[in-house]
Image 1 (cartoon, rainbow, N blue to C red):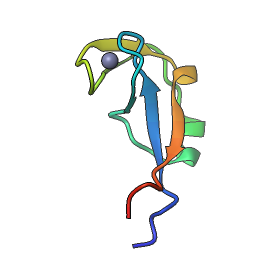
Image 2: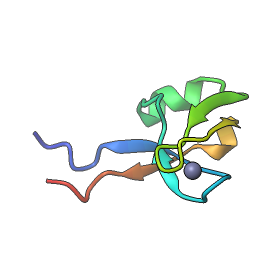
Image 3: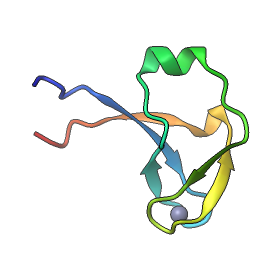
Image 4: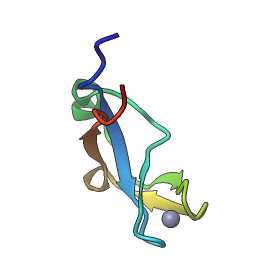
Length: 66
Ligand SMILES: [Zn+2]
């Protein structure tokens, strides 16, 4: 469907250090307009919840799948 450049909103877990996809997926334009402060998200690797601020979020391009 031509979605090779679809960005995925990610977080780095402070407990296990792994990256995991945020529960709040959105595109870059939407992300630029919102405020995120003290957002609780749970790591998909170690299942521990943490609080994140907007600076903790980053995008990766999900281009590994086809
Ligand atoms: Zn973790």
